Length: 323
Image (cartoon, rainbow, N blue to C red; front, side):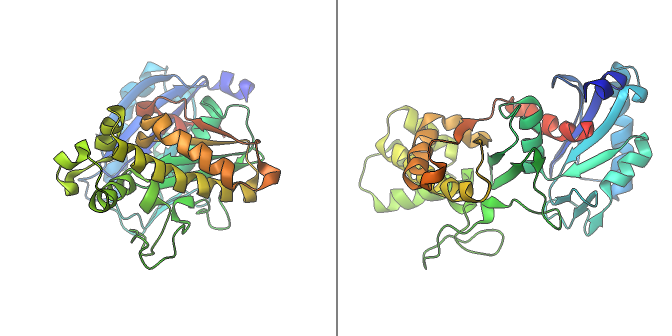
């Protein structure tokens, strides 16, 4: 890879969100040399979006001496299919159906372009630039509005037969009648308990069924966020600590199950919820140790991502550009 990187020492990464698209020109060490942002919404069609993106990218490309110094481009996007280079029926994008996003950018820039979903992009970024550097077997868990995952086995991201493998956030962890409704249409999915929105749901439930005093009672229950729970935990609020204990227990138990299918070297946690630090990580580690099959015990590390949160999505996408 080093030889190829010397020939063309930069790649482009695109983090395509429902609201904004963030582009970065990145070197082999994971340094973003130039960056630009455009809106993802508000275009008549995807071709107009791509044209706007190419125009906005030109100054960033010139910073590194032009397109002849760029090896490729990687895109992290919702419902992205690595095999086909398409975005397939993304709910939070304006363009419906099958969108050939890799082909459009490749033709416009004249470089190879690959696409994957945002959690797989995060795993690629961690393996190329972050805590998983040198690892060939690990599981990335992204804890944001939902729960995403990227599974790496023998140095390769697992995509499955259709490009959509690795949706661990939609593994069902509760089949009781009280299981929580998930946005995917099923009940009891992991993300309904361990995402940032899941933490807020747990807070409302515990508040309604506990007599403990808590600073969280000063907030309208419908307005509570995971950050509010963190602030309360920092102040020693027992109810807030109980919320993180419950969240961590669910996640640790799930990871103990996940270990059985890929025997990872590490689980790496990424996303806003990881800012809770040991309030979340200690219960995860405890539940994992108590539930993991004995043959996997004491083998996997449970780590927090080392990538800068504001840059990680772009770095993750850019890692595809080296392939």
